[in-house]
Amino acid sequence: MLRNITKTITMITQFFFAVIILCNTGCRQQSQPPVISDRPDNESEKYSVFAEYSPKEVDIIPLTGFVNSGDVQQSQINLFVSLLDSFGSEIKSPCVFRFELYEKVQRSAEPKGRRINIWPDIDLTESNINNKYWRNYLRAYEFNLPFAPAGSQTYILEVTVLCPTGKRLTSDFTLNPSDDSSR
Image (cartoon, rainbow, N blue to C red):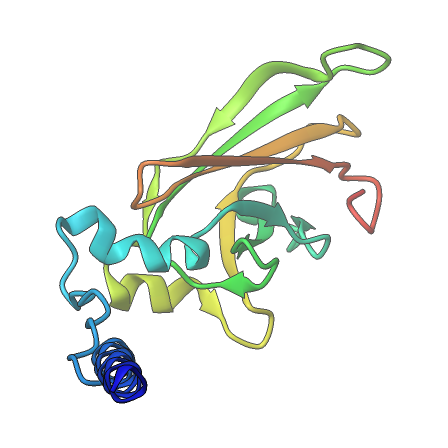
């Protein structure tokens, strides 16, 4: 009789052990992963993915130089500017360009001397105006700035780009009217 009671207790224990195992291994509903919303909490998060594709650097291409047509009134600076994103790729972007020309001071810690000229800002925030200056084959913008150089004076041309994000980018380029390569 003791043997029957021991068998019964063993069977009941095994039964409860099996029930406990079944309850803990799949009989209950799995917890769901957190739901990630497609809509960001605010506007800045919504557009933050595009930040890497906005202008991070401005570069004046070495094709830039003085163009003389023989007439002093028609002399100009033919300027090529590219905007680079965070990957170093040339991009097109709505922005405002500002151009300033300075005398170059030889053998100086600060080579930019007095400002010679500042041209009116060129606003390229409208697509039709932006397209007018964009040269797709160069992946750059082209500008023609009227200016007659004085003799063999060397200049520093500075471009400032005002980006739609509020960021300011600048670059300098040395212009020498007597040097064909303008470097």
